[in-house]
Amino acid sequence: MTIPARTSPTPFTLPYPAGALEEGHRYALRASISAAGELMFTTTEHVAFDGTQLDGFELMVQRTGGGDEPAAAPAIVGSWLAEDFGGGGVIDDLQSTLTIAADGTVTGHSGCNGFGGTATIAADKITFGPLAGTLMACAEAVMDQERKFHDALERTASFSIDAQGKLVLHDAAGAELAKFSAN
Image (tube, rainbow, N blue to C red; front, side, top):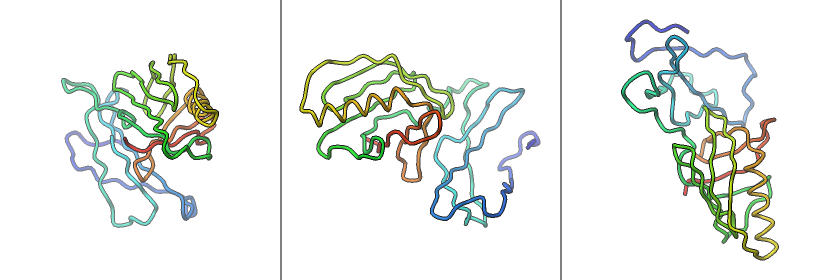
C-alpha cells in the first residue's frame, strides 16, 4: 500500500479469506514502511491477532534506518531461559540460557557448559555460529539436554515471538525446535 507523505496514523485494512484463520491458533501482524526500497520503519513488538479484533487496533512502528537515529534492536535481543527442546521439555532445575546482543554476539549456558559466538540476524531470520564452549562432562541427562540445545541452535533458520512473549526457534521448514522465556 502507498501512504501519502506525513500521514500518521495511517488507517489500513487487511483482507483475508474467510476460514483462513484456524480457531485456537495464534497469529501475529507485522508492519514495515520502506522508501526507495530501503526499510525505514518496522514493528518491534509482537502484535497478537486472532481474527476477532474487528473494531481495529494500532500497530506502532519505529525507525530502523535512513536517518540519524539508530536502528531498533530486533525482538530477539535479550536474555532467554530454555523451556523446551523439540517438544521434550527441559530439566526443571537446570538453567539453560541464551543471550543475544544487538551486534549478534551470543553467549549462554547449555546445561553443563558455557558457550559463546555469533549470530546473523535479519528480520525474522537467524543463524548461529560459529559457537565455542567449555568441555566439561556432566550427568547423562544434563549432557542429553545440552546436545538438544546445540542441535537446535545449529538447525535454526528463523525465530518468532509468540503471544506470551516467548522466543521460538524454527528450522528451515518452519518446525519448532526450541522455546525460551525472557530471563
